[in-house]
Amino acid sequence: TSIKEIYISKNVKTIGEDSAFGIHKLEKLVVDEENQYYASYDNDLYSKNYEIIYKCNKIGDVIIRDGVKEIARGTFIAAGVTSIELPESLEKISGWGTIPAGVNYIYIPKNVTSISFSSFVYLNNIEVSEENEVYKTVNNKYLLSKDGKTLYFVSKNAANINDFPSTIEVLDYYSFYNCDNLEEIILTSKIKQINNSAFSNCDKIKKVEIPNTIEKIESCFSESNNLTEIIIHKKRGEISGEPWGAVYGTRVIKYDE
Image (cartoon, rainbow, N blue to C red):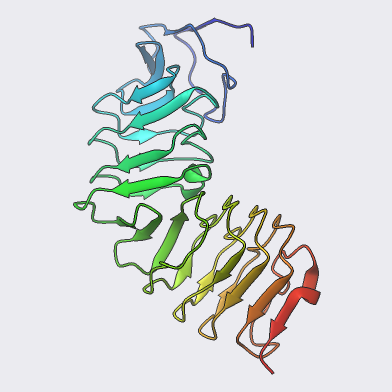
């Protein structure tokens, strides 16, 4: 953490995206101008064509430069960033925890077509451009596919889901991850599939109720240590794979008779 300056020579071809430079702020990051793969600008690290940002050394309110098409995993330092303004050129957001915990709100521009949804495991509020053809948001709380059938993200400060969109059929990976204020979730009658880690790490959740429309459940309840009641409106044996990561096992699963 005492390192203040890093110089990247002309022969470097590969830099690991996952926190290659740690989580601390560098005072100076310079790439040799003869390097064919990377470039530096204003103390940040980019691909040579400036279309991918790999490391942002700024804190406070951060504005990503125009022309950037991808934000790579590990771009932002873990602490000190309070807001991020994304460029209209952006197309892709990659990797676990890409948007750091200090950021309360993010606006997704119209050209974004690919998001790693573990990128938002700390985020509270999200908004998507109405012109975006792939994603949409409801109440700045839910991030959905444009057709409303797949849920990708729930605000991490959500205390209830009484406005849960009725169109949702699939809960995608990490969709409820880190929702620390939720104690009970009653899903709508259209839910067909729950993907891995959808309810993982929800510290306060005690009860999840799943409708009879459910067709597939993956290991979605791991690390939710207070979950003691999973109600499924199906008969036992109709859904495989129990207890789906529930820390108290099959004892907490209740089926219809």
